[in-house]
Image (cartoon, rainbow over all chains, first blue to last red; front, side, top):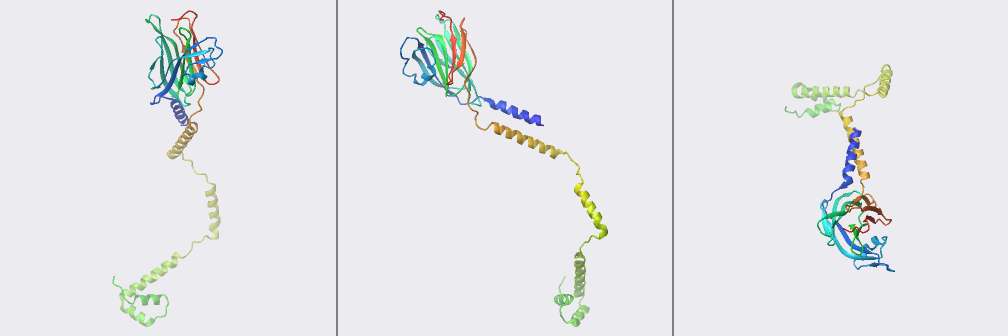
Length: 153
Length: 150
């Protein structure tokens, strides 16, 4: 009987540990082109104030805004966010843990120059804490590198 | 049964109050109802006296009384593990389980840092790396080989 009680408690804990809310989560993204321009002072495009702290540690001195958006993302559904003609961001909120962290799959696809092939330039799954930033970066652009800053609210 | 108006006089005479005894006796000789009433009064009187007699324990019975009293105090009651006992244990287990659940589920757990569970790329020759800085910002980076654009 004691074992049965413990099993009930354990199952309750496991069931309560992670769940899929019916309400979408708001995710903000900002796509940035980061460049090394040998500036004496770092430059941030207007509109990047919200993500400036997230970019501070990166070894670039100029950040140009490509795209930004904030969109409600239903759990279990993949949301497509256009970045530019080469890159597209896909976001899939999976679930929420009891501590508030959101399990999120984020991938950035890339088209070949001839537009005949599309690959996952980056495909990642993570537990993101609400209010913190996630940088997805390193993809090449014409004059710099792509950084996509994501935060869940 | 019809009552006789002389009942109260008979009752007072029976209780020893000062009434004309000659008159009462003459009436009793003539009235069957009051004779029956007098008989009932005598029965009730006798019954009340018997009921008022207290039960006494004699000296010969007292030792036996104390002995049985002591045996009763020290006698072990037979243990009966029945349905109610099992039900009580089950109820207690459920209460404990719910209490533990309540304690551990009180309020949300503190939010922990972002954790990168997996990251990979399909770009030929590229690798990924990830880290979380002190301020909680997580970074997943693709290291693309030099000269390999797309």
